[in-house]
Image 1 (tube, chains in turn brown, green):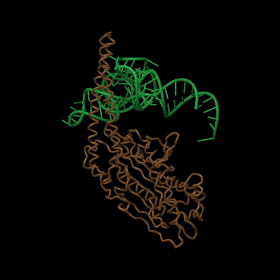
Image 2 (tube, chains in turn green, cyan):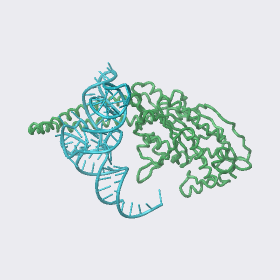
Image 3 (cartoon, chains in turn orange, purple):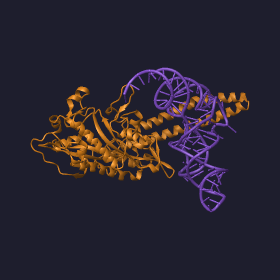
Image 4 (spheres, rainbow, N blue to C red):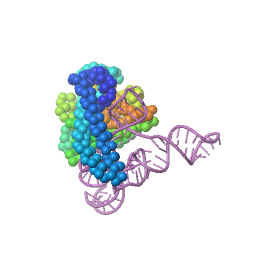
Length: 423
RNA sequence: AGAGGGGUGUCCGAGUGGUUUAAGGAGCACGCUUGGAAAGCGUGUGUAGGUCUCAAGCUUACCGAGGGUUCGAAUCCCUUCCCCUCUACCA
């Protein structure tokens, strides 16, 4: 969430940033916010002045009672009793004004970094770099949804039976490949200095709000009926919320955490042509890296995270490209996002396998995640990225590495899989 | 799940309606003292909002969370979350 002091001192910048993110009537909304804040302040002031008066009177009554001047105390009491109702009304008005302000503020996305390209759709994203050569497959090459059936390693029909569409069952070498990738990704992150966390995969409402999934993406999460807990859409939520309402010691920064979790997404309304097979699932595994940084270091950290993800893709020998997302395509809470896409040979298209973002203070403001520098408390910057999400990596490995001997497993994974080919 | 006990500042801990303006202790910071240190002594030590050009100051809220009673609530009442003990159950 944007902060009001920032908006007040950087009004033009805020309007320009919101416009780049395609918020309609940005100028109007910002004007409205400032007016609402003025109203909140004046109502708060009225309420506080009344409270001050009442506090002073209560103290006087206390003193009179103690010195035995009962009559005087009674008189004073009658007098202040009348104040009570007014105070309640004023406090309520101040509270309502504050809620109105927050409710509007919460609907605004983060402001984009100056390097974010203009644009509205995926085609407007900027290709930052390409790595590797796109393999040429034989005529008989198959997409992964055929390969998984041929080798009987991932079973959608069984998943349909026990749960529903989008919940595949991994079997045999398929299951082993999942476990291999999870361990490989975790080990790589730990080597890069990340600290491993195994968080709960159900979270409460406060956590959903802290990282910005609520109220924006309410419909994308599964909720338990009895407790109202949400199944996490990404490990970003529990791992970042570890630091909700925390003032981190400056010496502990940066914080670099990594965690593996299953991720759950309802993906309501997004089923169509491009979501066959492993391309889009309701449940999938992902290794997530999260950093908490001092503001001045956060963009260096973003580059470092991008390089970390790229190094993994290189070790897996998967051709990829890096995109800098345009204002219209980037996430609600992000200031700058890089997407990594691997080439899926048999589908002939790029598949997003990672997204690394700097949220600057947007999440930290909701989380009340601060640090103290020179005695002043300031909001930290939060960052996260997938390193990596499994299903599309599996799809790319299957499709790109298919040959007469079956599917060839990348060298680095063999110690983890214990086999060299799926055949 | 049942019964009982509890949640107070960085930590320990006192506090059952009115100098609580949260005692006392520890820790931490600074100062005095010292050859240096320890001890001792002194001072300070939370968060958020408002006011203010800035600072100081003043002011409001915060004793797990939310609501209520009262002129006045850490203290009384209600709801809720969490922790501990015993019992039951269970991987």
